Image (cartoon, rainbow, N blue to C red):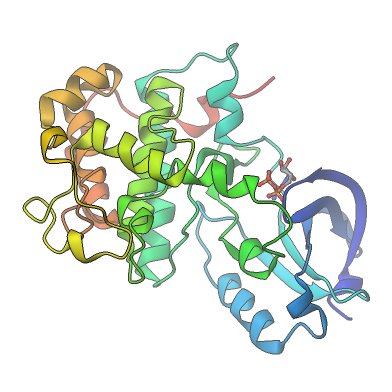
Amino acid sequence: DDVRRKYVKDKKLGEGTYAVVSLGYLKTDPSVFVAIKKIKVNAEYKDGLTMDAIREVKYLQELSHPNIIALHDVFSSKDQTLNLVLEYLPRGDLEMLIKDGNIQYGAADVKAWMGMLARGVWFCHENFVLHRDIKPNNLLIASDGEVKLADFGLARSFADPYLNMTHQVITRWYRPPELLYGARQYSGAVDVWSMGMVFAELLIRVPFVAGNSDLDQISKICEAFGTPTDDNWPGVSKLPNYFPPDRAHIIPLQGRDFFVRQFPTAGPVGADLLMSMCALDPRKRSTARQILSHSWWSTEPKPTKKEDLPKKA
Ligand code: ADP
C-alpha cells in the first residue's frame, strides 16, 4: 500500500497483450517519470498474488545495468492486479526504427545497437537470468539513445494464457531451434539465437526467418542455415518434437560465405559474428561473453555514439 501511494498514475501510454501501460510520476517529485505496467493477471493468481510471485519479480529489481530496463517497484492494486513500476523509456523501440522507411541507418548504427543489446544480455546471463523473449519490440530506447532490454517474459508468466495467442506468433521468429524441437532444458544460448535474429533483421530490415507456424519456422530455419542432424548437432534427434529430415532434402550447414553474401552491410567480420550466434547446436553457439570479445566491435566503422543514433520523428 505504501508503495502504491508513492506514485501518481497519469495518462495511458499504450496497451499490449498482457498489460496496460500508463505514465506515472513520483508523488514527492513530479519531475520523475515512470511507466506503470498493470498486468492482466490470470485467474489462478487472482485469488491472492502470492508473495512468491512478487518475490520473483523483486529479484529483477536487483538487476541494475544501463542496458536493462530498471524495475523500480512492484505493488498489487485493490483489484489484486500486479503493477510493475518501470523506468520510463519515451523513444519507442527497435521495431519502430526498423520498420520506419523514413529512417536511414547503417553499419555503425547497427553496431551501436547490437553492442548495447549484447552488454544487456551478457549482464543477465552473468546473473543467471534468461530473458527468453528478445525481439526488436522488446528493445526500448531511452531519451539518451540507450537501448534497454525490457519485458522479461515476466508479464507472460503472470498473465492469462488464454487472453490472446497472436503474441506467440510474433515471438516465434526469434525462437531458437532447440525450443521449437521442444527442449525442456535450455540455456543462455536461447537468448543468443534471438540476438542473432535481431542482428540479421537490423541489417536487412525485415525479419530473417518468418515462419507462419512452428513447423514452418523449423523448415525455414533449415532452409536458411541447414538441416539439424545428429552429425552437426549431437543428440538433436532425441528432442521431443524432432522429426527426421527427408533424406532427399537435407540441406548442408551454411558456411561463412553464405553469411557474407546474405549480409553485406555487416562486412566479413560482422557476418562471422552473426554466424556464431546462429549455430543450430546451442552448445556451438557463441556465449554473450564470447560475443563481447569478438573483433567486430573494434573493426571499422566504430559504433555510432548513442546521442548521434537515428531516432523516430
Ligand atoms: P507490447 O509489448 O505489446 O508493446 P507492452 O504491454 O509491453 O506491450 O507495452 C504497451 C505499450 O506501452 C508499448 O507499445 C509502449 O508504447 C508502451 N510502453 C511500454 N513500456 C514502456 C516504458 N517503460 N516506457 C514508455 N512506454 C512504454
